[in-house]
Image 1 (cartoon, rainbow, N blue to C red):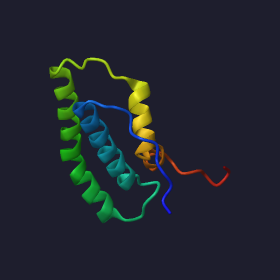
Image 2 (cartoon, helix red, strand yellow):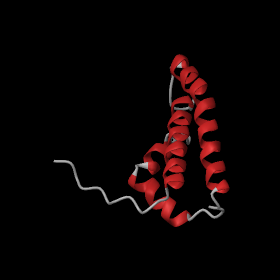
Image 3 (cartoon, rainbow, N blue to C red):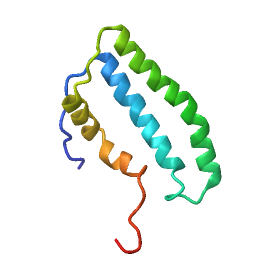
Image 4 (tube, one colour):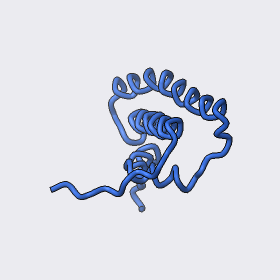
Length: 101
């Protein structure tokens, strides 16, 4: 049985798009991270996809700005990232523990 996840906080459509595009970029950076993978082809494919995903992330932020959403509600967006497993996904971007850790 799958555990119940907490509900996503209320987000504007633009905020939801920002979160989705941000996590896309984080996932791709995790696939590129040379400290975690040995496959150059997978990293190359992720790097190629990163260009378009970064553009989509920029566009999501630009849309928020054009709509007058000039402030980021960090606590709300952080809750959304946690619900969407953002902590685990972002951890793939960092260095893995060293041999002395």
